[in-house]
Image 1 (tube, rainbow, N blue to C red):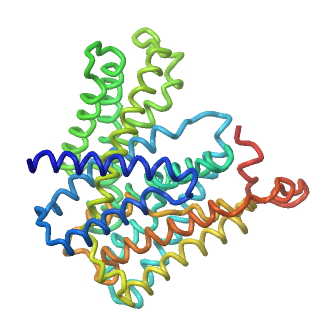
Image 2 (cartoon, rainbow, N blue to C red):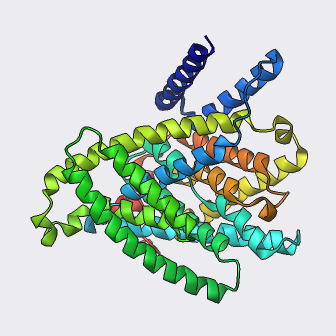
Image 3 (cartoon, rainbow, N blue to C red):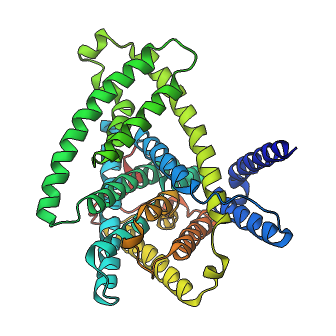
Length: 411
């Protein structure tokens, strides 16, 4: 009987998560917020009724690691290296790199100079909060116009990748910066070679396997290689990024010797099917992760005055820096883009990856959760604001621009 109730509960959670996802178009409330709220609601019900649920907190890091791999691969599959999108991609890279670097640098300096935290700990605790969540941003940008969606896609995907590589670098190399850079560059070169071989093998498998079970085997192989890379202290997520970018940009190999082995039209059909499977698995992992995260979140930490002040300060910093950069430097006139800097799954996953001995009390799970909720709430408000008329948003030709707006030439 208990088995039936467990299966029933899991089915209800998946259906609710799906309803949260599709309701965004109408409610403008991102599903992530509703999933965390659902987890908190379940926690309150369990505490009130006295229902005994096994402690599954140890499952969070496992779900988190799987989610991290899936999201990074999904983000890298979104980046198409095409000439028509080159300027849009460059703007996305510039925005992601500058905003991430400035935010992490300022928060790290504050933690080191004001709160006397060691540099390594300060960096590790700052980096997760500097990353825009592509999982939240891309899905929430569905209501924007095409040019804005592409900018958000490029910026958030690159932000994920930069943040993860920086986090891996600091976590693995805690010695001198020069020595760390040498080791990281050497490991990166090895990773690129392994990734190239893995991409060629798995791409051929994706294309050639005739068995009805193929995509899951390929995905499992990617996860296996990631875990093996982590065990020998190689940047495993960098490997996933290279694999995803190679698949997404298969057109670059179309007029090469690869033509003798690959039917690229069929390969793209297979790749589209693979992306659909990947998206559905990501949806499942993300749903259960956020529900569990909400369930195990300490509610008393939410009303703690210090946590609230820190979270508000961090969130304010995120959007102040973004406003300054987009308005004054990129000359980006679309007000809605300023609101699109949500923190999400990547932030939580990297934060949970910090060893206990390197965590800072000032930035705890409740602060991270509050920053995520606040940043998503700001994005939700931005989505609800009416878009300015196009005539008001187009800059005059004679105005000096450091970089043209995305809407001018991204096709």
